[in-house]
Image (cartoon, rainbow, N blue to C red; front, top):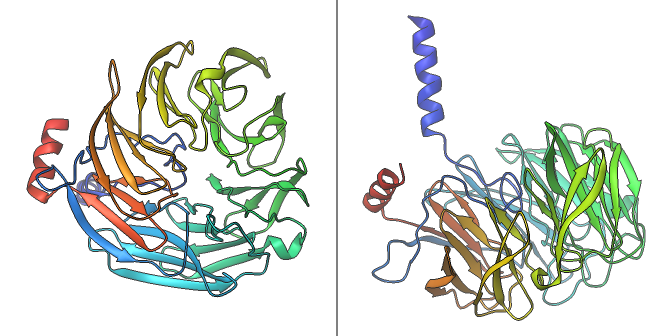
Length: 410
């Protein structure tokens, strides 16, 4: 009887546990909100609404993450932008659950369009790692208790640039992978999640780079992709062992993404790489698919990119053959989010555009947040999250509509 009770408790917990969005571009780093039924239109009369909006301190262009029942975001404030904030809000109500502040130990100078709170935080479900342009790396538990703090800018004082650092960390198992590339000391490192100690470190190119590490699953292993101006490298995240490398001129803002077939690399437009016998081979390449600032999205049989002319291009992921193009209102810094048959894009002026996907791309709704938005949206548990410098929004369906949509989705 006791075993049955325990099993029932586990099943109830699993059924009621909220969906999550734990890092930049989601749990798998693909930009897909799997099994999510999200509102398409949150204007008056639409299927969604603004559930809440909260004020944020200072500035920030980092994306929100959703862990359990918390929405976590970073910000920076102060005359020198050296006061670093990590804030956790209740996902249901928008109430501030906790806020922690630390002083920057590294350089906080950055371009006016940037912010010291540029990298998106990451979580494994138990801990939250916040990274900043000052190269300060802090780990907290979900109650807001500081676990450890690393001042990488203090350790490597020339690791900085005048525009600002923006690479977001990722967590693979118990390793935090950070990418710090600039004209000074450039490196990638694996940091132990529980202790904050460096497990491995590799020198990287001394060149400006704002791409983020990406997850790469291949032959049953979880590896990490590091994209630099002159190469793409694949490492084993725990040990830092290099698996393979592809020398090519890569974009320095949009980051690579992968699926079970290829690594889709922003290089020479967009290049699909296949690893065969530990060596990369070019499966296809098309310079018409090159993304501008937003990273590519690849889901199922389709790949999507947004170019510098704000044209959304859909291509066959297996061959690179272009299927259609749609004109959006841009420009864009935020990487889109895809859920089901819809792509959610937000321009740097704060205009959200929802594109219905299929044989052609059609903008089916727009919403003007009327504030600059450079952060990529997040989605979890049937809700969307957008952030500007000043505000964090939750968009969701009213409860009755949410239940009906959930039933339709099933």
